[in-house]
Image 1 (spheres, rainbow, N blue to C red):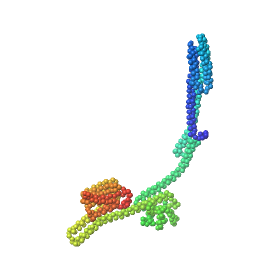
Image 2: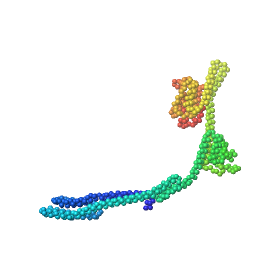
Image 3: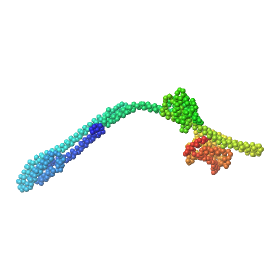
Image 4: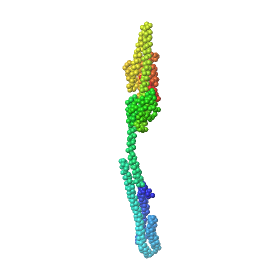
Length: 637
């Protein structure tokens, strides 16, 4: 048990605190007990002293000239009551000193057997005496006998008082002794505790702090000397083990740092290569110079001997042509067996024998998510093997190159489709307007020739000539409108700005007062939608200018429910004639065609007080719930 106590600072500290507490409680409890034991001692001393005084009072009464027998009896009874007083007997019960009990019994016996019977017998005689001489004789005899007994009796009382005082002092002395012993023991335990703290706590703790500071500065060779079985000793042992482990870890740290540095440098080179490749391949179309620079970067980062980039034509996927070359031509390129390098679209390692030995060629597919576009052939150094990160890097580069090739080819295809759409629109515009006007003029020329051959009347010939002039003027006007349409560009302007410039243009060229009312806010029109809207408004304003005989017109943009947009042109002219769909009204067909391209509705109706309202309603593609991508394909001209 003592060994276990010596192994624990916590138990030793708790034991010291417990001893100090126990000694303090012992002192306090002893003080309380002694205080309670001395309770009533002073009253007992006073009571014992009053016995002495009462004895002399009886003597004084007996010495008086006229003896009062009743007074003497009362004083005797008073003495007896004081002798038997609880204040005196209670103290005697609490004390263990036999001398006090003995002398008290002697005083009590002396009073009850000698003193009190003496007084009582003489007082009884005095009561029965008849003559004065006998009375004086009895009184004198009582005085002599009582006086001879009172001094020894008082001496016994004095001794009794002295013993009571000595008993009280003895108890106080015991209290002081107990308090002194407790104090000395407390000081001893406190000194032992301080010594324990100094030797077993402060010293090892100071050593631990010093070692921790040294370890915090990187010195892991420091060790703690206190490695006992107590708490700080176990902590010191744990610190020594930790320092040893840290020293071992720091011994290998430089190697690990070098490895991590090399790995980070490799990753950095890989990221730089990917970034450079992505930056170069985003320039569409990708040139042969870009591919050659990319092969140079791959050779520098991966460490290959040579590289070749072969792409397949769009029409023949089994043949390939070299786009870029870095180093000697691979041995297999001397044949036309391109399918060997292309393989099945997966990474493969090819071995080709030649006169100088054999070569290891790594074939990386060039592809995106949809198509294969060729291969990247990389010839390794003899005996070199590519790491997993190098293979992953090369396959990622193959995907980037494939994406760039796919984007380039899709861009070329989009341009080709745009050109075809443009030619189709031009042909449709010419057929719907100028071609039909020329056909009408050709018919009028044929009529004129027939009338002249028949030598018709001059009025008929002039009527045909008038129609020819009107048709020619209309054809010229349509030609100018078509030229304006084909030359129209947005140049980064929004549709509201373009409409405002169009309104200003028509106001300048004609006498019709045209105003623009925009009730929309930041509508995201696509480029095709802006062109179609602008051409519909221009065609409607042209009809207002040339056919309506109007004095004013309004162009209004409204945003309806469900993100629909309405563009309307209203005038106060003569309205649309019944034969509007006949000759020289091909602009209506053009507006219908453009409204269909917007996936919208074109509405033409007369106004109640005269005039015409032309409106087109559609939903912009960027506000459409399904984002119909087909609308983007309708190229606006």
